[in-house]
Length: 110
Image (cartoon, rainbow, N blue to C red; front, side, top):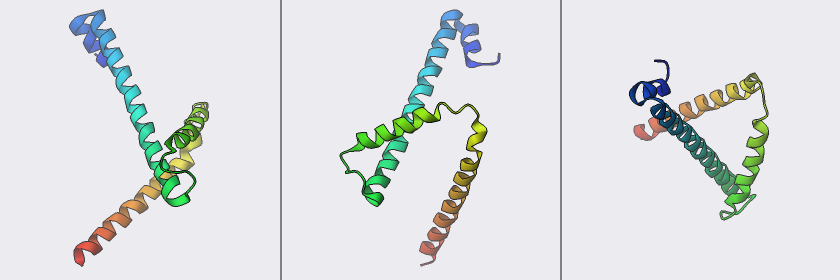
């Protein structure tokens, strides 16, 4: 057995394979929707609180902008093009973790 659909096939035959594949596809689609919603919420917060570009009620503008950006990103054929931005993102995560831990240590010390 090499996949979940193979397990479904062994247990319930072809209907089991189909049910497992539908469930996995729905799970992946809902995860992507949740992730996009997470990005929209956070970027909208940045737009409202720091840049003051849109109002709090205009979340659909942020979602529309991100939809256009994500649609163009879907046309990228080689993921190696994102290596530099991925490295930059990892570096920023490292800086954030160091900052949070150091600020927490300072708060505990006080």
